[in-house]
Length: 392
Image (tube, rainbow, N blue to C red; front, side, top):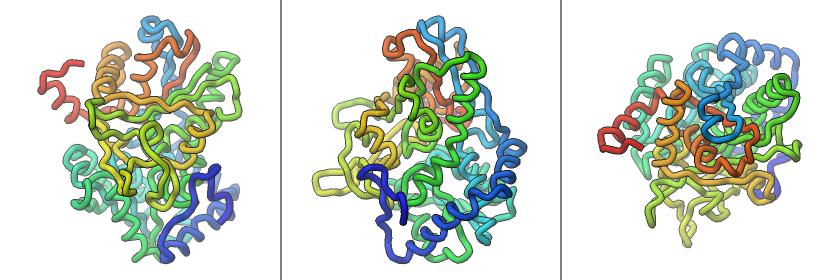
């Protein structure tokens, strides 16, 4: 397999039975994706089904309060409510060109599941979604949306009952159905070629943001910021800016509650190298090599690993990776709602919180925050926080 690593991170550490479909996906990326017909069909789907391009929205109230120029890349305005549809439409179209008739996928917050179900319905593919039991409970509205779109949703009740366990079950299911099924992997992690495939499909975010900001202002922003779980929305924003030495790039991990000994979802800051879900990356694991439970108030960041390209960008220092606690993310959620009339996903609220909490880092410059999804799915979590007397 070619180009399977980002520095020392990445690779393809999977059972032998998974190698044939992974090699098939790699070949399809090389032979089908560059074809003008594929690119034209994907562009049409992104424009006329998903709703691209998404706007850059200036935040006048927060900009004045912070003493900088704050912009949001509005992936929340896409069909199904998040950046996930960029990836699922591309992979579903690729699967159809490969002759597959079904998709299998994992989901945490449910947005990737909804986006996969929508893409499958649009392209006439069967769809099965694996979701941790914990996430099924806290993202029930997205479970209903998946089912309404025709997907079969299977709750995973073993392990921590979150995204890690959903990925495990989806990989097992793919082994038994690989001839007819494509695994529509949801984030820029997993075995090669998924980190590269997902990054290529999500880079439309950064390409649009870069081109639009240049068009409006005649210059590049001083910084771009995105939340990082597995890392697909972040690498999608970051990748087109990596060659721009004057642009600061900041990824934001979830620090959990911040209490002593609490679980978190910050493997880049608090983890160690290891292998999970087929790739060598930074992980939350104990001294015996066992994966630690992860935690975040946002289900989409609740993952003990991270994409290997992020691990490499962290090691090289090209991207700075900070951390934000649950309470700060909830505070940022409320602040954006009241100041600008926009309800962000709790995942995106982590990225926004970092800017709100560290305005002096950005020295009064222009900052683009990727608003990777909208907050409709998080109303239950926000409501519980309010009922608990937490006003943030």
